[in-house]
Length: 119
Image (cartoon, rainbow, N blue to C red; front, top):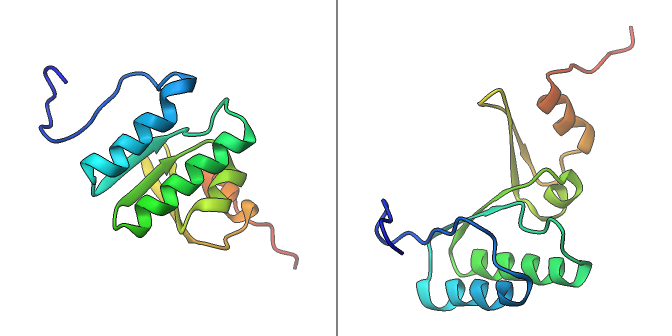
């Protein structure tokens, strides 16, 4: 890619079109053998079957040794696929949660709210 400021890094300004998404992802996995992949809103606007394919690809890449970072606004999706969840608010990491964290815990960290404790 022309003028890539990070030689060896694969960048793409726009998401692949529907038909080329899987082929493009497979090419990354097979030929480039990346150590780190960042998926930004990877399943927005796609059907359930395509989502399952993306989740499968992400798991396979992780099994092969790649680190996967997924940035998503879909909290149920994050809870379903992440091993570790970092929550950011106002540009800072404000919470770190392991698999099994509740939606409420994560939302409290994201909003800055605190649990009300009964007296």
